Amino acid sequence: MKLIFRVTFKISLMLTILAGFATAEEVRETDPGALLNQGDALIEEGRYDRAITCFNKAIEINPKYAEAYNSRGMAYTKKGRYDKAISDFNKAIEIDPRYACPYNNRGFACACMGQHDKAFADFNKAIEIDPKYPEAYNNLGLTYRQKGQYDKAFVEMTKAIELNPKYAGAYLNRGNTYALKGHYGKAITDYTKVIEIDPKDAAAYRCRALVYMGQGHLDNVIADFNTAIALDQSDARAYNNRAVAYFIKKKYEAAWDDVHRAQNLGYIVHPAFLDALRQASGGEK
Image 1 (cartoon, rainbow, N blue to C red):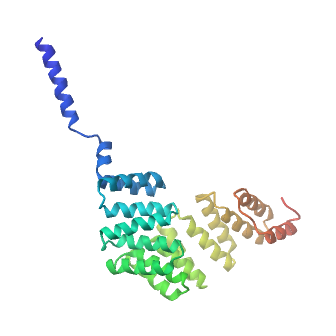
Image 2 (tube, helix red, strand yellow):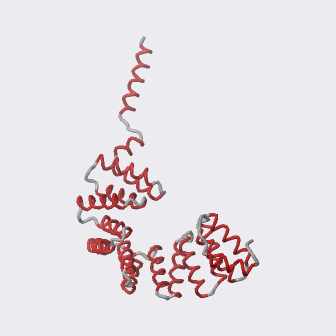
Image 3 (spheres, rainbow, N blue to C red):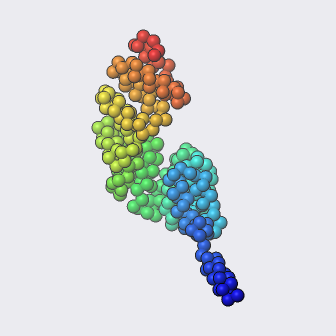
């Protein structure tokens, strides 16, 4: 009888002790900070709906959690739900008017909706609150570029790079701005810097290839499109543009191969290019 009592007592004690400890999953479900971190990680993975679920739970636990509203707004922005995103950024700002991040993010959402004056005001406000905010300077530069004010765009993008010399996005945007102004050497330098920072940035290879195309450096064009396509095999425009380079080099079979790849991905190849390729190659391959 004593043995049975001891065993029963030990089991009861173990159950009591275990009941006092939440599992890691339960902690995440009740800790708004952990939910925020989990949601932010899901955004990085492109799992926006699951991220929003995490932020919803964090806000339910803490309705005054400005960071959760900001992050949920970012997830909605990624989904193209700009109205919902702006609503969340508004709430984050209402809770904490000195929180620079939602001003920058609201500005980006406004820019995506074509509301450039509102975007301009928000980026400036973010910089006023945090003068060392590289993303806000970069976005402000993009807004100036959209207004055709290229010199001011260069100033803001350069400021972003000075604040964060590893900011690949700012180099890419400044490179695109240089290309628009015809400063091709500077554009190539910036694209090359992006690739140095992030060798898997397909956009930098595509953009540099187009500048090389304008300069007639066809081998460089093809090499960069080869890399861009290796990084993103669904990029129909890259196949199309590489086809043009092959056409100029009179490599018609390779050009047709790329044309068909682009078409299979749903890209509409320009009829004039198709006619020129048919004429030069003696018919479609």
